[in-house]
Figure 1 (tube, rainbow, N blue to C red):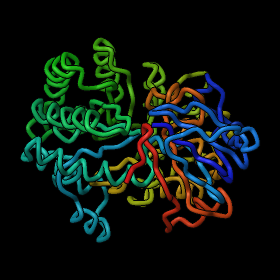
Figure 2 (cartoon, rainbow, N blue to C red):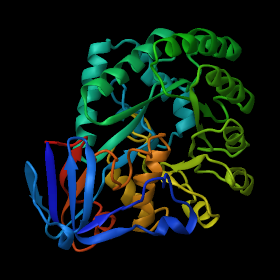
Figure 3 (cartoon, helix red, strand yellow):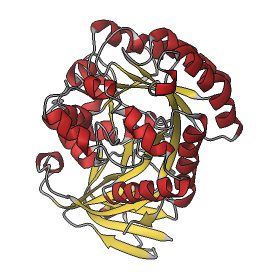
Amino acid sequence: MSLLIINIKELLQIRPEGVHYVSGSEMSQLPSIENAYLHLNDDTIIDFGPMGDLDEWNADEVIDAKNKYVLPTWCDSHTHIVYSGHRDGEFVDRINGLSYEEIANRGGGILNSAKRLQETSEQDLYEQSIKRIKEVMTMGTGAIEIKSGYGLTKDAEIKMLRVIKRIKDAFPIKVRATFLGAHALPLSYKNNKDGYLDLVINEMLPEIAKNRLANYIDVFCEKGYFSLEDTDRILTAGRKFDLVPKIHVNQFNAFGGVAIGVKHKALSVDHLEELNQEDIEALKDSNTMPVALPSCSYFLSIPYTPARRIIDAGLPLAIASDYNPGSTPSGNMNFVVSTACIKLKMTPEEAINAATLNGAYAMGISSTYGSITKGKKANVLITNEIPSIGYLPYAFGDNHIDTVIINGEIIK
């Protein structure tokens, strides 16, 4: 189907082919065309420009976007959206003074989610998860990374990855899968970390690779979870199965995990709430994308990723939702963009770059997603009538999205 959007107040994130991410001062620039049109054919962007250049209105459907902005859909590069049940009881525990670590030590946290998931059938898990997928699509997310890591047994981890594959096959949203077997130690391996690492590397990884269930491999590199040596061992093993590294790192402590990620040419290093100068130096001259998860900091009341230090050092930055039941029970990327502006002191232009083009790069898909570029996928959102693009993060409690188009389909 051919779809033509006309009279666009401003068409944002116009990029030439070959621009895969932006860094430093370039993040404050959001190329655009005022009073524009955008022509989509099936699942592809085929043309755009000023309305004055549009000679013929030859399309199956025409949308008038007068007084509205058009930009690429959000690219959410870090989620745990496939999970079972909720952890609202732990939310109350934190209000009553317990820390994230104290809850985990009591058998809560990741282990709580793992127990529930192990007891949930694959079909039930799929049905719970697709409700969340449908919701984030209507809120403007057009590409999403989904991690395993709430299984912590071979069967349960593979069950999660099968559900992710089913979502990928059933919905127009772009899905990338990450194997996060090293998310926490199961209770049965509490005093046998090496035994669990052997299980992840020698039993889970070969089966996952054989069935092509993941694109990436991830590790929760954090004190009390997996050490630098553990991380190095897991990422090395993942590489042997052609899984590209990504890392959870520096959420609570900065102790060298970023450098390990860069050493392994990780596609992204995510969280970074704690960051030191050594981490910033490690990221310079690398192809690794730093990723901030501002709504996680909001929910847990922990420090926010120092975005200004990262950007002012000339580095790129992506932002993502971290949608999960324990520390970010929301996949609303509009709120993530607002929080990036309000708490991370990013400009609206920087936040939009971080949530579109740089987010796509953090998923390895920026050649086809994340910007308005001829030949890229037809993934765009149309705002309501708003006075400026700054109003999008400013009025953070309102829904500013009128229409979402993913893979050329209007999402109802």
